[in-house]
Image 1 (cartoon, rainbow, N blue to C red):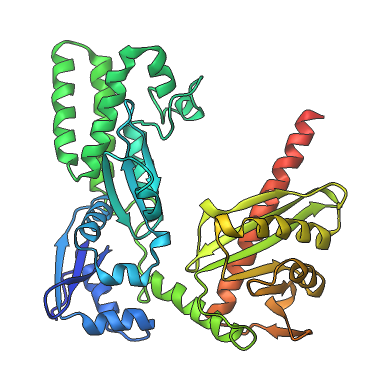
Image 2 (spheres, rainbow, N blue to C red):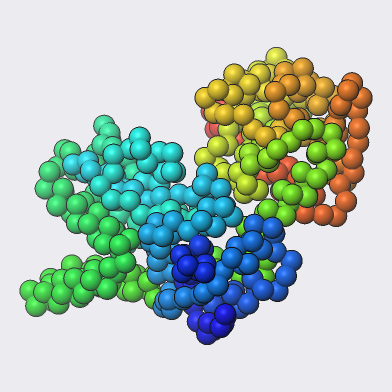
Amino acid sequence: MKLPPELSGVYLFRDAHRRVIYVGKAKNLKNRVRSYFAGGLAPKTAKMVSTAKFLNYIPVSSEFEALLLEAKLVRKYEPKYNFALRDDKSSLYIGITPDELPRIILLRQRELTKQKLKHVYGPFINGNAPKRVLKLVRRIFPFSTHKPGKRPCVYSQIGLCNPCPSEVVKNPELRKDYLLNVRRVNAILAGKSKLIMNQLELEMTNYSKLEKFEEAAHVKRKLEALSYTTTREELDDGYIENPNLLEDIRENELISLKKILVQFFEIKNLNRIECFDVAHLAGTYPTASMVTFIDGEPDKTLYRHYKVSDKKKSDDVGSLKSVLIKRKHRFETWGKPDLIIVDGGKGQLSAALEVINEVPVVGLAKREETLILKTQGEFHEFELPESPAKKLVQRLRDEAHRFARSYHHKLVSKAIREA
């Protein structure tokens, strides 16, 4: 298999029958493809590489173009290993609704059948990719993610929903502007950025001929922004360049943690891990958080904040127990996690086990990332060595701390303002 040149682009691995089995993108195609043959890959990735017999690549001029092209090819070919290496729960789609004032929304595979859509783009295997794409496009062509309400939304105040559907309903003359924005976003998502740039150039020229210089300048700014977005090599956070792909890193973390836990529990998968933490300041404004990792990656759509009763105040154990009771009541509607981690030692773990016995629960002591487990009525302490498992557990704990404290600070700030 011949290595591609050192260009930005999208690559396709094909099997012996020339079926596309994996689609990926890279800032440097040569380095990315070479990394697959350097060894140290996770089992699923290694299997994909052994199956791959042919390679195609498509050079692109920008990461923006690469993100859209990758999603388009994944949707077209449905490559086996794109979904095997990264669970579909983490994949997102961009949808445009058929409403009179169309909304542009993000949704997951399971939501596609429930939501009426006029256009669909994706799946984007990296869940952050469509968010970044829409964030950039929305600055140029504002659109709405919500149905019309009684008053303009907060995004209309910062120019990201302009005109807001809530204003369009009251002033139908704005409808044309809103629909034009949606059509242009749709064209960009379909890979027709050059067509939109040509339209903007023509508009700018016509305004100038009519000596409408303010309008011409406004269109020029849009043209420059679109040109910059669709031609620069990297977006805000660039490509992830790593010899071991992100999927491999996360999978190795999960495998490493599972090897530890199977000594104590019967665990088949660690697709969904939830971590709980309680925060308060000297017993005031106690709050709790639940963060959720899907396949080793945080999924903020599944995060939850909990207000804790003032009666419990500095009682971390009681607070945690009350929160886990609420979570258990949602097992049927939200689904059960494969593992629950509670921040704390034997006291917190004991409280958790009084409530939950359907899934494995472990405590995480603050000292040196020590796992606290209880089997057959006995506690066990397992000090995590330097390993992928330790890194995963640290990320879970730190994210739960951050999320709990952010809500706690919000409540404190609100109380100060109202005082």
